Amino acid sequence: MSKNKEILEEEKNHLANATRVKYFDIVIDHGKGAIITDADGREYIDLLASASATNTGHSHPKVVDAITSQAQKLIQYTPAYFANTVTAKLADRLVDIAPGNFQKQVAFGNSGSDANDAIIKFARGYTGRQYVVSFTGAYHGSTYGSLSISGVSLNMTRKIGPLLPNTVKVPFPDQTQRIAGESDDDFSERLFKQFKLPFETYLPADEVALVIIEPIQGDGGIIKAPQRYVELVYEFTREHGIVFAVDEVNQGLGRTGKMWSIDHFGIVPDLMSVGKSIASGLPLSAVIGRKEIMDSLQAPANVYTTAGNPVTAAAALATLDVIEEENLVARSRQLGELAKAFFESAAKRYAFIGDVRLYGLNGGIDIINDHGEPDNEATNKLIYRIFELGAIMISLRGNTLRFQPPLVIQEEELQRAFEILEKAFSDLASGKIALPKTDNHIGW
Ligand code: PMP
Image (cartoon, rainbow, N blue to C red; front, top):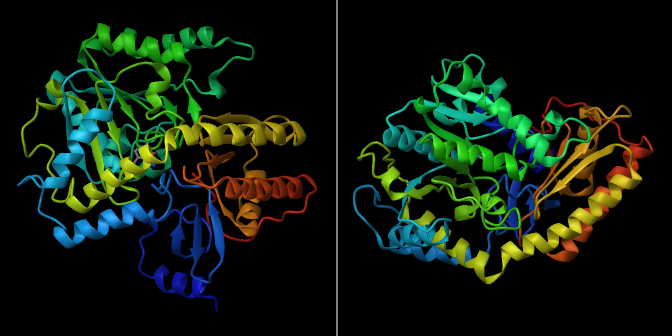
């Protein structure tokens, strides 16, 4: 039996199904940059880095050094009880790099999910209001709070309700909502009318604490809201004293070719959540935002034993250094252009490639059938073929290829990834791919 199989067999009996989205039968043994190696020594190009929190690639030497030396100095003393040298430094740095020319503060957490919970708490604490408005297609996390405001994980919420009360979802302006030929501005105005519907019927705007948005949705399919739409929603929050927050957990830190996804819109949020790649894979998250909003709550309203842990904070400081020193934001933009050219050319040659969306090294590529409808089976075939050929990719929403390699990926590795994708596309076109018999999922 292969090592992969042996370990998976052993693990199967002990791991709760609710904690693992099963993809391929592999066991990751080690990783370096954009390459991961399984327990049998097979190498793969990682095209899933944003999901696994490694924008700076696997085991970046600078990050490894920072972790090692901090671990030798101090692994943990609860930052909520006593300050330590590194966590304080990181808070300073985050305040500096977050948008906004106003006084800011930071609240550390352990995951993107608890950061979004904290946003709900701060917004409610500050406004004294209860309602939270979020968007269909958004993913904000897996705790009760963040799950309650998510719009993609309805299948997860069966059996575990009731969820957080007083949460309202409005339609995100994705391409499925767009009328053919509609301009960005007309689309924005029409969808904004839908946004306002709850407020015109049952929900007084002055009872709303928070509007939270991923301006470029990640798990929802890599979908950018039109500029005007985000402006209209933002202006609405200004008119009604509502906290405007953005979730940058997936799309932040250079992923979209700008430091933050909200930078594409020229809008400054009141609060934002950061997580995933912030500590290159160690569990750390943060809410960064207006001091007066964060000041509305007192400890222990948002205290976690290991939030802001010094080793994770040292990893985060090194991660931010790497992003700066290696120009990863610009790199994301430049390599993103190559990826865009590749996928757009492929879309011309293969009828099953529909909408192609790339913002930095960050893509959603829809796979469709002859009628232009989502083709989940073809997507699954592609994902498996890509895996067989040596790259790791998953799908979003059933029919969207998710393309998010580490921002440090070498150009040769990227070209190799394009070759693998091209081969998979051509195999699908010539009917050469059979779907393997498995009950594993391929994506969300
Ligand atoms: N927000 C967004 C936008 C995410 O993509 C995710 C994770 N996919 C989360 C929040 C939740 O983060 P975590 O899994 O670290 O709790």
